[in-house]
Length: 349
Image (cartoon, rainbow, N blue to C red; front, side, top):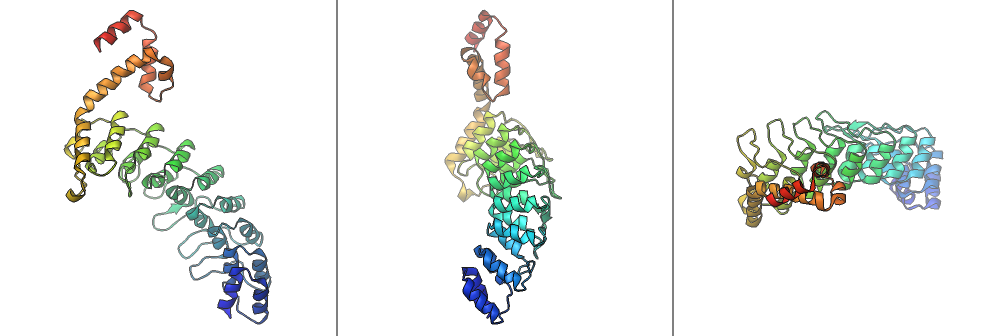
């Protein structure tokens, strides 16, 4: 009768549930089914009938784990009032908070954290925390909830990987922005010797310009190098030929990436164009566009500097609002010189 009881509890049939229990049906994991379906009254009845609030299913999940998975905040609160362990572990080592993280259930997380759940508990071979999971999945509200409860945004696992790395690797730009605004270090380096910006250049999915842009806007070093002396631009250049890489290269150059930098292997960005892309996967037009961007970089950089000088004088208010620190500096300097000197500069450029 146990399967029938689980089915009845899961679909919210309180009458049939009571009849089956009274007939001697083994409760087993019927509590889990009731929790998953959000049926508080049935859960309470089963617990009052002798079921354990801490019983584990075949995966080692307790009813509290299930409540976290199913976003059942009120049921989670009732279970906690019965004294269940808020940090109980499944067979994989997951806590209820870890389960809530996978689906971004901020409401359940609030309940768990308010009753003392361990916000920093890690699990698995990769030592992943709830913040890491939420960041990697891009669950912004969940991330904010953890931060409000004091989560360390720069906490890392044994490999030096923090939540920002997880968000970056999955192109979760909004999650990255939330972490960065909360103080995450945009220049942090993992144990493998890669900065977050390098990780953005070699994401498991498609490299997105927006992912690199949010890091740069928050202070990432565009010319940061790995322990082997490889720059972000060189990493990106090796992947030229894929859709969207022209935009990424252009972004890096506009932020001041040094196309002339020589990596530890003695090669520049222009020397490694498309090296990590199989011949049959290369888009010829993308390869050529990247090649031109790198070749024209010195001239483009000089023009941008000259243009900023003119802008400093013509539209000082606009320059003052710019995120470019150099532009602000030039505006201040030119504000001190005589009109005649500026005219001479403009005629020269």
